[in-house]
Image (tube, rainbow, N blue to C red):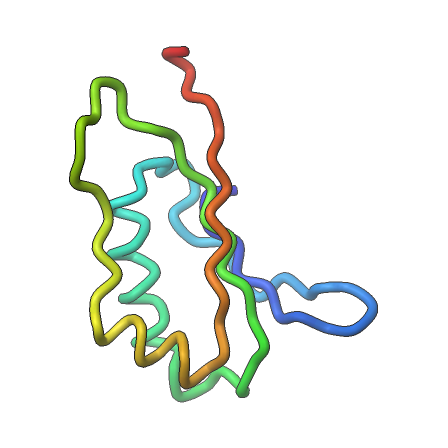
Length: 93
């Protein structure tokens, strides 16, 4: 999974892309999502879209994590992209 980009439709959502396949770490996924959106911003039609981010909790994590930058927030708003955060258990649990 890790990040599925879906175009929302009234009947069903259409998958646009799957990025970060195999990477379940939220910080690197947020970075890759921002890079992907900057790359695709000019060719994506106005949404609504969903970026469903599947991640696992870092073992022993006590803070920190992914940062949603102002640039990413501007692009998300412009393209009408909602973020879904889908937490999954890690193999270590």
